[in-house]
Amino acid sequence: MRLVLDTNILIRACNNESPACIALIWRFYGNSELGIAFDSGQGVIEREYRQNLQDNEMYQKWMVAMFEGHQVSHVSGKLDAKIKRELKKRGFHESADQVFVAVALNSDKNLVSEDSDYGKGDEVRAKSPEKQEVLRYMTENLEMNIMDSAEGLKFITSSTL
Figure 1 (cartoon, rainbow, N blue to C red):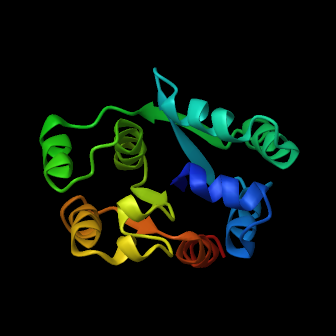
Figure 2 (cartoon, rainbow, N blue to C red):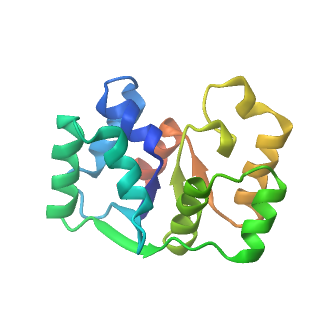
């Protein structure tokens, strides 16, 4: 099973800011049933990870383990034009976020994020009707599994027992 991990999950895990994020990423360690998906071609996800965590030793070690364990796959990060229009119409317009969605759609449809743009996270605006509409569209129309770190941890734990 492949998941797309939003950058905020890795930041919170590798900076020891969230026990749920830490537990989530370490479930991947040495578990060949779990993998992460990156975009092929442009390398948007890897670049965003590096820009935010290149000096973080925990991140570096985790990524080495993921690559050495052959737990990284690359899929298209190109979003279908119709889906892109629908997301933009709902206010989901950041191009990097759209790549994360495209990769999830082109892999196993699992995305873990605590970004309010996805209708997830602790920020008040995550619960706004606009953000909840984005979340509804992704889960119902696109049949994606959008999870925060605690939901992601529960999901992978129950899926890999």
